[in-house]
Length: 496
Image (cartoon, rainbow, N blue to C red; front, side):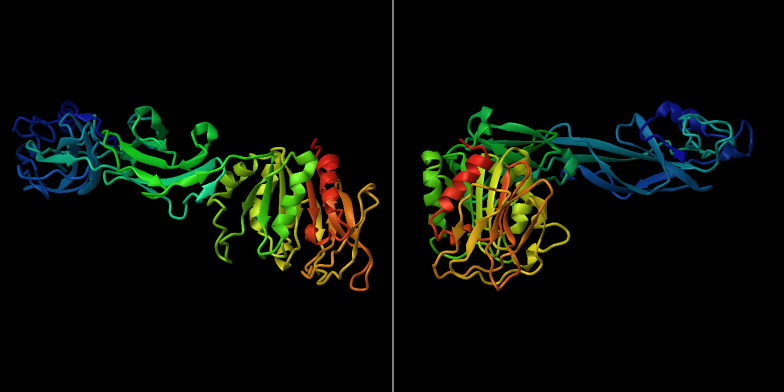
């Protein structure tokens, strides 16, 4: 490698390295040798000093060249302060000029060096540091420099500090209504170089009081906030700006956009009902009625989070935050218990990404749905977040009225359930194969449409997850579904 430490060669070292008197006297290769009449090269810049030159951004691409009347130019010494110099063989370079205030001024100097050296290594000449010890050893090659231009070309560069710019990441908008958890993602840019951004400052709701602004390092462009950070019930607005190393601030940007706010509601109970149900019918009311009386009314008026509203085949529901991890997961963690109900088109990717971490944090889940073909995924899917090793590859396409749902022998004490006589069909029911430490809860009664008594409900070994591969609300023919849910909460989840 060629050792050329940037901006470390002083003028005195340069004089010694070139063996020449820079006070417009001749330089010789060796005393009295044939190089006594050597002429110094002349250096040129592609721009010339101009007192009318306006300020420019701090990143400058400069070009230069040299002419030697009696030889060749070997390279150039360049400097931004006239005291420290760096050698290069290039004819151009991009310089990031450090800003020390709103505006600054630099004088760029470049000095051509010819190729008529003295044949010996002089301190300051570039060398190949093959052993990387930072010192030129006798066996290491070097660049033998000759006479330097005694009058370097100069260019005064008045630098304008361009303020930074902040914008939110596209598609990261916070939902219109959330619980007291919200995440924000942004990017910061600066014409002077993104590295000139020193920090970010953000505020919630109030931008007038100086204490409202909190500081983040330049490296942080993502933030999740909670009630403890100032998110309040009702209307909220998030503000952010960037500050560069010279103290210039970007325009403040806000989320939501000007004239709008996002609403925050605080949890009312320890239970969250996740509505992952598409059809418009009485299903939502069914679960709210049961949970209002569960455990003596402990979960009355439980919160409902509709994750299907506004969803399409290519877009998440409008109430689902852009970032599942951490925003949606942290939202679930606000509650001890989750009842997640769906139809035969559950949002499996949302459950797969969020429920494992929610359970690891101590949460409990009652999950009920029928499963389409997408649930049969050898790479994971439903088996990632439920207590089953596999599900039947072929679904039961129709469950007739009055079909019984029998408690498994592994779960004595649970009441029988029965398919109700309402007209909504029940399809895509799949048999479950539990994990080794799990326990079966319910099986379908016998019927000519399927073989045996397939398992359709399983409880995890740690008693934190109960899965029904049927729509549980469609099996209230005996009026026992509320009792089953109550037993799951008390006997499995340990709720009191």
